[in-house]
Amino acid sequence: MLHAHADSSHNEHLNVIFEDVRAVKLCPSYDPLILQPAEHDTRANILAFARIPERHLARYLCLTLPTTDTEPGFIACAQVTVLANTVTDPGDAYTWNAYSRLLHQLREPTPT
Image 1: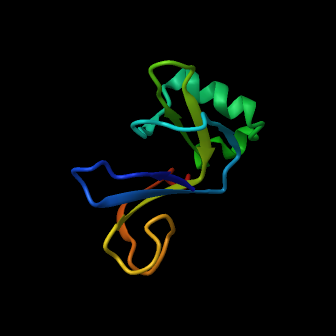
Image 2: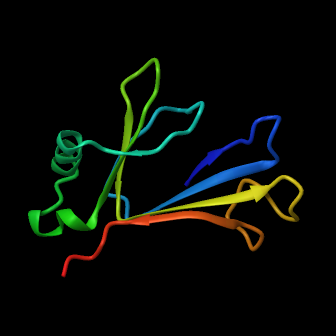
């Protein structure tokens, strides 16, 4: 899970949950936290790095985390879920809990 703090003008924290992770390269922090789909050649490199068999390539997402001062990070996984917690919710804004609100869920389509 990656966590993004809300800035002073927002009262939400974001929790990004990655499932079935096959490869990761991350910096200690991202400001701002941006996830974007990897371009074709980058995707191919990430999947090769992760040693995912060709028959399973379509099942995995490849996301990059761009930065301004270093090489971008990446994650290869089957699914990503983005949840928001407000700082006023009961419980911990830094965790996935009963008050978390689903913002987005992303997964590769299952091949037919």
